[in-house]
Image 1 (tube, rainbow, N blue to C red):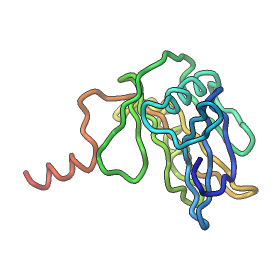
Image 2: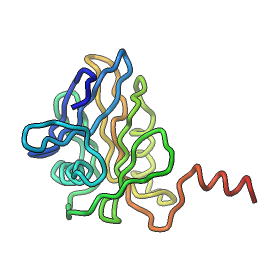
Image 3: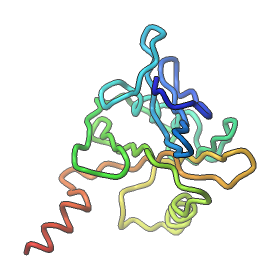
Length: 172
């Protein structure tokens, strides 16, 4: 378990949780694995991202879990092997089973975060020129506005991350 203080926890399954931690006022969403009672930071391959996919499939639509809100557009689950996305990025992304990308928000911003509303609007309008949204998870600090803690989208095989894409365009 990180040395930071845990502010809130969303149980994703028997061995995995998503913790909101506070390190001197800097909030983060941290996936945690609990093997044999020894909590530690989850990494790609530890099953936390896969546990989140199972969780969102078990909670389709909009649901509240304490101070967490889940909006899920999927209702099916099949297990998958986790692989890290290793390019430098602000958040932490994990590919699961070559089907989905879980993005953990490692630096929470003050809410309301615009992504959940934008994704819901685009999805409702049938917009398809983006990876298919599977779910967004938000967390509300007390009575404050919700902020984004995780997103799940469909995986696009062969896609290039935005940083590499922009760099390659600049060089060309």
